[in-house]
Length: 379
Image (cartoon, rainbow, N blue to C red; front, side):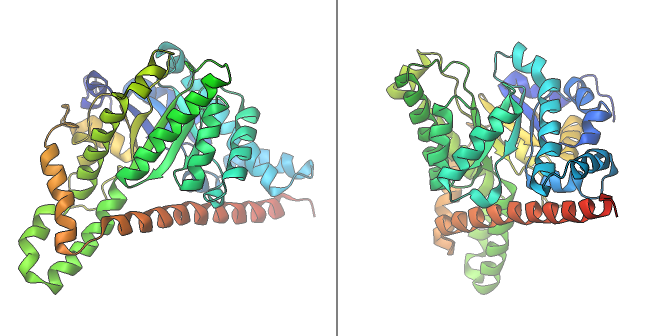
């Protein structure tokens, strides 16, 4: 890892943004690399998902001893999976606990997602969130719950229970607004139950690059079909995700200025920060740090995969831009229906695809564990 004493990534915090890393594995913990990233790259949190754990566990011998112990104990594949993942999450929480303490619970969190096939099942999602929180037993754990209508029902009650929540797979501005109010209702319910709310934290994970990848493909097809709209299409290509995020931040400002939110602040409530997710640039024609540079601002988190962390450490252009060019952001979104794109339909498709992109690696991981369990089982 390149050592940079005054790297751009170290200055994101000067503008109110925290860096979390979208990656976790046993190797990262055992090697001390996570601790090094905290020091050299200012990584102040970890997010995980089924795809990350599938990549970490499948084919990695570092987990074999624990898997073999599970086999000897006649544990189910599901139990073995949870023992592997829960142990990694606990260790990561412990490494990040000093940041959690020194930031007064603002940062230092590790996110663990409930099984993705529960995205439309509020009751089971809530039950799993409660079970995960009890089993891992770390104050800096965040449970990731998809921001579907059913997921948000679980989010509200999970917050009311006093469990930190990372609401994930948010694409539309309205989905973010719905998430923010679910958090507020959860805090209000917790207060009504007579409990303190000052130690509860939440982030709203708003996805970026997947939006541009999908919309850009649609724009290319429209440009071929109707050359008369080419100029309008060129003007918005590669700009929709950032515009969408800037508009979501405007909604965040409205919500946090409301009397209802300010009443909770007076009781010690922590703001639910917008977290920028899916921040690796997919199109090589675009800057590899575009989803960092353009969305820096107060009360935000950017969760970056390792390659984007290193790119930002090398050449991010750090300045507060989240509230700049807001009129242009609205103009970009307003152009989409003119050129033939229904953004609401696009966002619905992205949510469905996002759930599927987590279900498939989760299923693949379970299948690989079944195979490994058979290999490690005594003849």
